[in-house]
Each structure stands twice: as structure tokens, then as C-alpha cells.
Image (cartoon, rainbow, N blue to C red; front, side, top):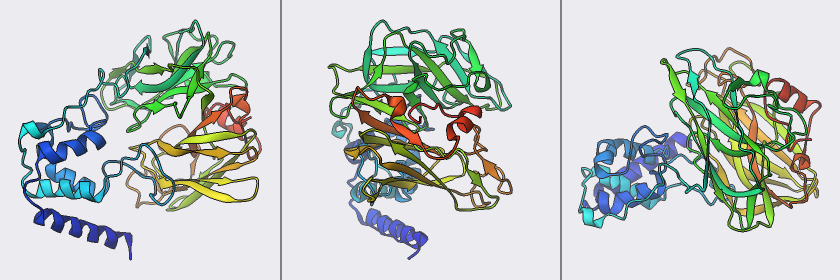
Length: 441
């Protein structure tokens, strides 16, 4: 049975169920709890979603659109294959929840009694976390109305007076219209990267290439739909050495009118000294990718090998507008192979997946990334199906990598945790303004 037939049958079944259901389904009693749990993180003022779902007045005009979105499983965005892996931050709706939303829409979207509503969720000044510390870019970046904008880097001289352990972080874009994505990097003392940079001045990536041995690591990051990142997986946290500074890396896109933006990262500090260190890896990198013109299923495979024991806790695939799906496969030293993640990729919702259970990665394990791309005219986001595509920073180019979170012993050097496969892979990446070589020596 084709995927279209299955989807058609699901729509028919749920529509019939919704029509036959009791009209007693109301927004305040039945719908609002579902929206609170699964939707309001993004669908509230100041967030990435285009409209709010905080109240009945907000949601009522969108009742039919909500029905279509949940039946087609477009919302809430969640792309992991349910047959591969289990994730603690899963946002997939149950059939009962979908049927409730369909019934509500089919029966005129009644409000019900406001007394039946659950208590409203409390968000801290727009944050998804309650930050102990906020670090903001010291100056705005002026985004031109048109043109391609190189990745920008801005140094913040934090010079932390003591070692810090961070249990959660969240990066907030100053202007979500123009911030495509961004990272806040830890620059430890002694790093040569941006050593001569003036704090508060934005530098293009071609002037600020990262080199080996700088010990750089992502502290917090922003992607549409990503939200905050947790580093506490049972007495673990991210380490920020005394004397470190923060560097904001931002990918801006022009929107037809001049704009400004000044982003910020919020940190939740660990209450106790953790037993394990959380590190963020770029994962296997397929920077030598070539996707042929009109290829609707181009495949790119990348690989890295573990040099120490660790535990995998987080997966976030990264591609651009031709990205179709991504798989993470482990090849253990015993020869056993295990697929730990498989899922669709949507450039507009670049999600991260927290593993429900920590996965042991023994020394010698190969971590493989298998990505597929649609470079055909059937891909509505494809800017030019007739063009051969290679690695590049801009959206019309492509990438193949996967941000991964690992737990390691504090004695392990994070920069030596994995070794990349393929000759001169890092030199090519760094030379083109791509990822740091951290974790991939």
C-alpha cells in the first residue's frame, strides 16, 4: 500500500471519527491541554511559529488548519521514525489527541467553560528555561535589505572568573526574521581563534577561520523549532573553563528591508559538581559531498571512529534545502551494526532528539551518517535542479553533518574523542569556512 493511500485512509478514518464524536469536546477542557503540552513552546508571541495558540481567541480562527496539520502529521513537527529509537523529548501526538482536535474542528470549535481550562503555562520572559546567566551580543548587527550575507562572528569578552558547569542553555535570536540559525561558542583561554578581534565588532567567516587545537565547543544554539538544550543526563553538564569568552556565530538572511538583530544566550548553572562532562560534536562530516543534477535520492555517507569510550545522548541532523532524510548507524568493534536514528529532514524545522536511554559508544566504534538529498524539480525548495551541488555555507549549497551530544569522563580530551575518516577532510572543511576541527583530530 502506498504512503498516499495510507495517509488518505487515516484522514478518512479520523474525519469520520471526529464527525461521529460527541460535540462535548471543547477548547478549554480538551483542546487547550494538548496545545500546552505540544504546541505553545513555538506558538506564542515572540517565537518562531507564525501565530499564537495561547488562548481560545488565538486558536479559533485556525481550527480547520489545525485539523489538517495534525491529521497529515505536519504538526507538531517530529520527524524521527517511530520504529527506530526512543526519545525523551518526543512531540508526536497520539491518535486520541488527533481525534480530539479533529472532533473540535468538525463541531464548530466550541470554547466551553473557561473554568475547565488548566492553569496557563508560565514562560520566563520569553525563555523556555529560567536562566541564571544571560550573555548578550554587545552590539547590533545591521542586516542589509538584499544580498547574500556571509556568516558573522562577534566576540563577547566574558572572561569568566571561575570554572562553570552548565546544565542547560538556550540561544534566543534578536530578530527571528533574519536569523536563520546561530551558535554561541566557548572560546577557552589561550585559543588563537579571533585573538585579535575587537569585542562587539562583527567579522565575516572568511576572516575568522578556526584552527586546530583551540578547544572550541558550542555552548548553545538556535535553529527553528529547536528550543533549549539540556546537558543534564543524570549528573552531567557542559564545562566552561575559567577565563573563557563567548563568540556568537550567526547566519543572517536578508528579507527585503533593512533589519537589526542582537542575540543572547541564557545559561542554567549546575547545582552540583557533575560526574560526567557533556560535549557537543559535529558528528561525521560529509564535506566532500557531490549531488548530481536532477538526482531525487542522492546519497552521502560520512564516518568517524571513537578514540575513547563515551555515551551518546543527543542527535541533531543538519543539511540544507535539498536534505531529505538522515540516519545514524553504529558499527561496533565486534562488527555488530545498529541503526540508532532514522528520520525525515525538514530545513524549516531543524529538530534535536534527546535519547531516552544513554547509548554506550565503546572505543573503536564507527559512527556513520547516511544522508539523502532531493535535487530534483519535485523538491519545491530546490533553487536549481539542473545544478551540481557541493559543500557550502549558504542555503543553495549543501552540508552533511550531525550535531551529537556525548557524555565523557573529565579526563578525556574532547578534541581527541573522535577521528574523522577520509584524507584531509578537516583541512577542506576549515578552508571553506566550515566546522571547527574540535572532536575530529
